[in-house]
Image (cartoon, rainbow, N blue to C red; front, side, top):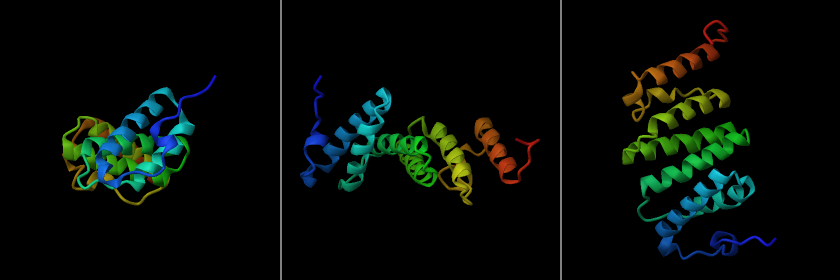
Length: 154
């Protein structure tokens, strides 16, 4: 059975004047890889998105790319990379008003715990909106108990 190659797999040379269209195409392909759990293809495609710089990045498209990339890094246990990608995703989702921003913030806090980051991402300007949300409070409390090695609190 022969697999069909996509544009991104065939062509490594891109017309950078069409960066925003390429990023949209990559976002769709990355989402598809995420849905069908094609990890190897995702690992080949994702780095190509980092080479493209659109004149104006669409926050919705960039959020999708960063979310899938962050989740990919989490499955690979690359916690710091996951944290960076997910926090970028969170900021993009905040910028475009995507309702998934709160869910991504939870991933950010989890990745922060696993990477042993000393930055409290809930105290950032972008996350202040969710500071009083019950779900965010719960995972923040878990994070604090984890840092204090408080088994009862966990």
